[in-house]
Image (cartoon, rainbow, N blue to C red; front, side, top):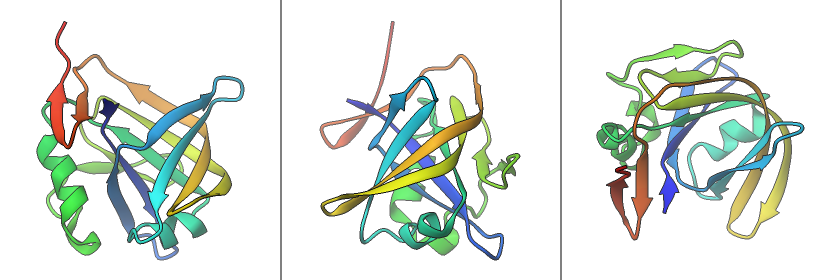
Length: 144
C-alpha cells in the first residue's frame, strides 16, 4: 500500500506540469528530505530535470478522479478545470489535498528505468483528512 501523490513542477515558460506518483517517500528528517521516482518515459521528466523546485501534493480519499486524470490524460490537459494555487517557489499546489510539500531539488540518481529525484522540503502544509491509497493495482482508503 502506498499513498497517492501528484508531483508538480513548472517549466521555464511558467507552465505547470504534473503527474500521479505512488513512488514517493520520506528520506531524512534532518535535513527534511523526500524522494520521488519518475519513469524515464514520463512526460514530466524533462521538466523535473530543469526545475529548481517541485511540489508533492498528497491526495485525500475523495480525490481519486484527480489521481486518474493526472495518470491518464496527456500533460497538456491535466490542469484543465483543476483548482490550484502557486506556492512560494512557483509550484502548483492542488486545492484541498491532504498535504503539500514544496521541495528544492538537491539531487538526482539513476534508478534503472526510473530517475530518483531528491528534494529538501522548504515549505509544507497538512490538514486532517483520510488519505487516498493505492494497493494491488487499485485505489483504497484507510478507515479507523
